[in-house]
Length: 106
Image (cartoon, rainbow, N blue to C red; front, side):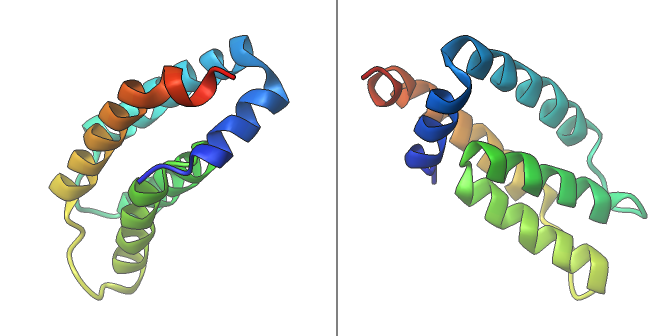
């Protein structure tokens, strides 16, 4: 669900304080996009943004759902399961918060 190596590497690269700022920005921006997410012309771009943000932080399962949603929205090959995308985000955040201290404290 989460690529902890990616998160640890990012935290080491930018520092703990900057990582906290990145997480805060991620939560604000991704939360806003998810709140407004709906079927329609902007869905492909929204899914692309969510995928990229998730990959940057190592939220791999969430990123995978967003990638599938982006593909479905761009090809018209199926409906995007927005509820599943939102649920994956919530579950990923719960796992992140549950294991953050143990995984990031060296």
